[in-house]
Length: 208
Image (cartoon, rainbow, N blue to C red; front, side, top):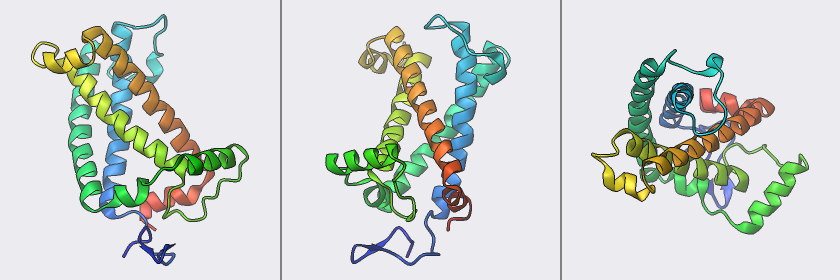
């Protein structure tokens, strides 16, 4: 039984596994794939910007458009396959239900208030607070949106129905960009919290 299991409304004994092996493996594969996709995506963006700015070459991947596309597609397949494994196991094992549900407005408001006053507790890593539940649920949904919008951009003729759902090729590019921005924002918060609460990082490495 893992530490995320609940007996009588209380978390299981401290010292047991918080993150199963499959969670840790898929987490770090996702992290590498997402960083590769973001870096290469910024290089692709620079070839045809949507806005009046471009990303510094020092934070892009691929060196030029062709190289960036190779990196982007390679990382995409890793992300898609790994993401399918993660979501499937999360549903089958009931982890998503236990960790991400429910999210109530009252609890969310209270935890946001606690976060802004630096009173949000991180003592029990086996249970997510409402802010974490919302962020993790949101990034999963953003991941789905960014993959689908990316496919709509990649194959606008072959997948014209999907491209149409996003409002056309140009609109799909904007959706893809803002989904990327949301994921980058999540990563910044995620890394900052991991540095503020080092034991959460240790748990994602060792499981305990």
